[in-house]
Length: 206
Image (cartoon, rainbow, N blue to C red; front, side, top):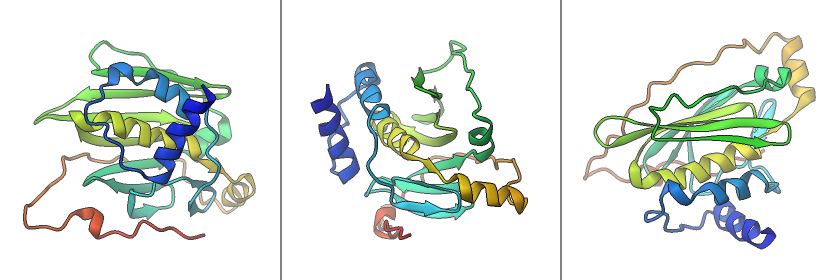
């Protein structure tokens, strides 16, 4: 098991382009378990009060304190860091209402969360993943779900909170306790456009 975890993590963290297109969510349980049990050795995206590991082939479009818009393969991922949930050590409660395309509860020690995927329109699926007191949302094609679930989970699992900085933000009343909703739309792709991955710089320096 340890060998499997290390191999999987090396590929994901190094940004290697594995072919996940033929994989389905039916056989993803072991990979999810491997990711949440793997201690990501470092972070490379640093912000006020928290940091996380951003896979090398992910770009950052915008960051607004606790909300970040990431891009991968021309799909946008909306990351929300819920500082208040972290401070209160909020326990996630979620149920499968029976209308979901995919649903899985995630538990690891004191961290809990879930993966929800809903089938949408025009061949798109809506992913919402909550774990480690934060969540990611994205709108994806079916053959992108497997890789997107693993990448999103790597990001959420890797989040590290800085208690001292968070305490200072509370003293400064900088934490509003509100999260901004995002409107998810399918990517707009034009044949004569450069890939969005050619535009954004992946590097984030401390």
